Length: 155
Image (cartoon, rainbow, N blue to C red):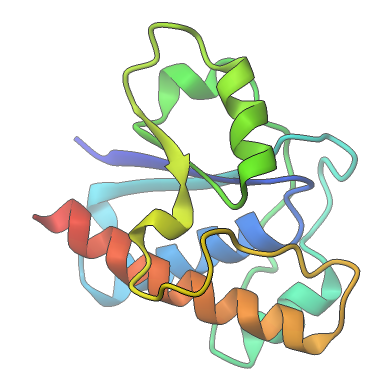
């Protein structure tokens, strides 16, 4: 049975699709892609149906990640029935998810960077209003946390 993981940010066009794309490649490279179902969503629905932000896709391509097939969607109540892990990019979205979660949700609901080995950041900062360096930092943080998440799940 596959472990189902949902990555969540605000609009599902920068951070969470990056996490989805990177984690898909990490599990594929490890030869365990068949053990996982991976998705992403946003707590807000402004960008539903849209591709990731062009700057997000450009930064991802520089490291070999193709996010072009991904489309934004909004978190829904059924996600709490579907996913074993719901991982937020930041505390604000985590609080929103906690307010949505049914009292009997038995999966893991927490911050994605809890699986990271680095200690400088606890949240993946939103790069939307910044420059190129913000998108590079997002890649660095997500690559690190993806490796940590896979290592944890393989224990």
